[in-house]
Amino acid sequence: MTLKVNLSITVIILVLSGGCTFRTGGQNSAENTNSNVAANAAAEPAGTPSGGGGESAAITAANVVADLYKRHDAKKSPFFQTKDRGIVDKFFTKRLGDLIWKDANNSTGEVGAIDGDPLYNAQDTDIKNFAVGTANINGDTATVPVTFTNYDAKQTVTFTLKQIGTAWKIDDIGYGGGDSLMKWLRETYSDKPSPPVASNGEFEGKYQVGETTCLVKPVKMAFEIKWAKGTGTEMFFYKDANVFESEEDKSGGRNEFRFDDENYNSGTFVRADGKTLAVSRAK
Picture 1 (cartoon, helix red, strand yellow):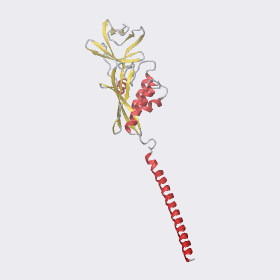
Picture 2 (cartoon, one colour; picture 1 turned 90 degrees about the vertical axis):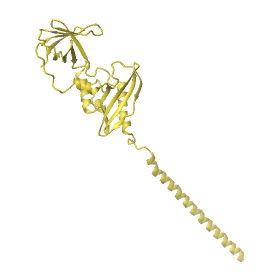
Picture 3 (cartoon, rainbow, N blue to C red; picture 1 turned 135 degrees about the vertical axis):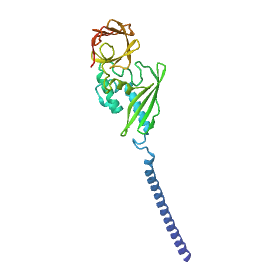
Picture 4 (cartoon, helix red, strand yellow; picture 1 turned 45 degrees about the vertical axis):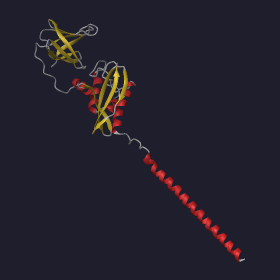
């Protein structure tokens, strides 16, 4: 009898003891699982890139240049259009944007200061091996090289960008040899005072030719003509009487200044195609 009671007590103790052990083990397992989920939940945001804040300044600056080329090549260029000033301001600083916009509006139907493709520095293009390089950041200024081959000629165009607030804006486009988009535009739309009017009897100084103007500068045995609209120069030579003629163009024609008298104050400009324009010395 005593043995049975003792065995029964022992079994009860073991069962109770085992049950406690089971419940305690289950509780620890649940706590460990919840702890891991919480840890993972807390750690995940730190391993996920934050939206819009991960781009470096170099990548952002280079992307502005790449986006400009994409829009330009898709025939949605900010150049040569007068419908949307906002497209210009999206890519360029105010000082460069103002000049680009001014050139587009002043040269409607004619060649302006930008007389070719400003992104490829050419009038005709056959582009291959195009690449936007890595931006070099120096404070609030970035330079981005763009390389390409145009008709088998390797070229590099360098963009200078300024950081305006949180955005990068293109401030100039360099073509090498001291040439740049800003230089072209400033030479045409300079706020500097006009050169003094030459005295009568000399073919030099500033002339009004139709709706445009030109500057005449004697150079040895010739006369260098720089038109207000355009980037190049044209050479004229004394022909006879009061006439000065240009070099032959591609079609073999010549432009002429035909003055009324030897004071060279007024006359007619005759284009190679036969069109005539009134000429007068500008004041």
